[in-house]
Picture (tube, rainbow, N blue to C red):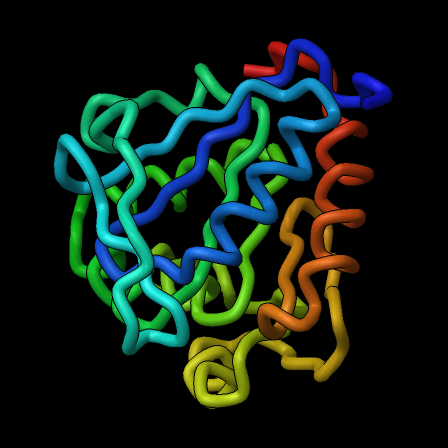
Length: 186
């Protein structure tokens, strides 16, 4: 551990149906570098993780409801995928407002796989260059984004990635991008 992210608070926003590997590996990458992570969700207690959207893969304890969270308390935001997870988030007003406010704050926001769906409903995809799981790309284009097919896309404070196979590049990128924002940036 190099403590690159020492003193940083990273919010992870997820709901039932989150792809386990995407939440775990990105969370572990920032924690290894010294960041403190907080799992936010739209319901309390715990969320159900999945493997490939079809196989239950255990649960994660929720630290805080997103409706009670403030952008000012966090230095960066992670949006893992899984098909059901962002579909649940994008219909929750508090989750959508939190993502919109986070992106508009200028702090880094990282989304992988189906995670960019929430960016669409937050109204922050227009004019941005993003990547995602192939089935989400049409939605991104329809929302006014420029879509690229590469491991990781960086556009200002938005970082996006395509799929679980891209996690090594995504994790390295989020650590580097999150390190650029001073701790306590809120």
